[in-house]
Length: 304
Ligand code: CP
Image 1 (cartoon, helix red, strand yellow):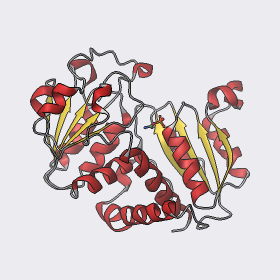
Image 2 (cartoon, helix red, strand yellow):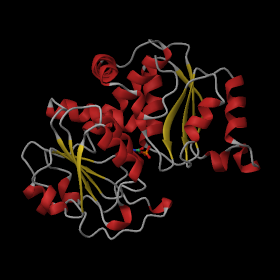
Image 3 (tube, helix red, strand yellow):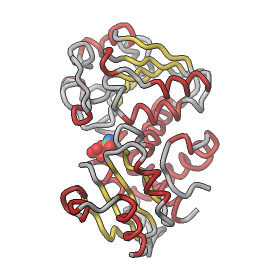
Image 4 (tube, protein in one colour):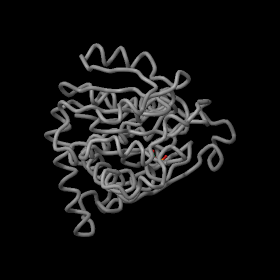
């Protein structure tokens, strides 16, 4: 039984396949019928130290869809809360606990902050992104999207492209892929933005084949999933994007049934001409699945 959601490694293959994904399917039906009262009386706080559109909106809408309430929400805690006056994360979490929420959704700029918060909290904490650390709920929706579109996870080839050094979504997704069989990962990045060592050690331990390259053009024809990422300038990444952009030329090289993913927000790394392609799922299915998965997670944590 999971209490806090801190990192994607917490999810076993069995939990994903037997519980979370079937629950997300049920949530698709709940949304189709305009919502339910499954979590009536439950209260959620969303406390974000970093800006967000998708994660905060989808969690808040997920709670509303299930009949629960968002009782307190801040989009920029470093500006609009007593964090400005120097309050620590732990004190903040202890105080929020006293207001009797049932769950706190936390985004923070520091790696390890969600774990710290969970240690100070008797109420479930869900990590909505901790600096360059992890973004577990994003990887769950990403994996769900892959499973739905490709009808399989075992045996796929995934190209992760762009800022692999400071992008947290690719880290969380790598951990999840490590739970499946015959996965092939291409880490496509320039020298200034390569995947960190801890992930490579984990993948080796879990017998996941991976290859590091800076040639997107070579990898595009081989991948079942191209997972593009933004340059995390706010975390200090400097990279020349010119060889790491998905455009018509890359589309032309890709498999017919492959998909193009991106956690968003997107900058220049996916050309607008790619949006209308049948293989692009970043502005459509990934967004829908984010809502279903977050509804399923709230149900799993609050009404196990
Ligand atoms: N993918 C993602 O986390 O988006 P937001 O930063 O808008 O929440």
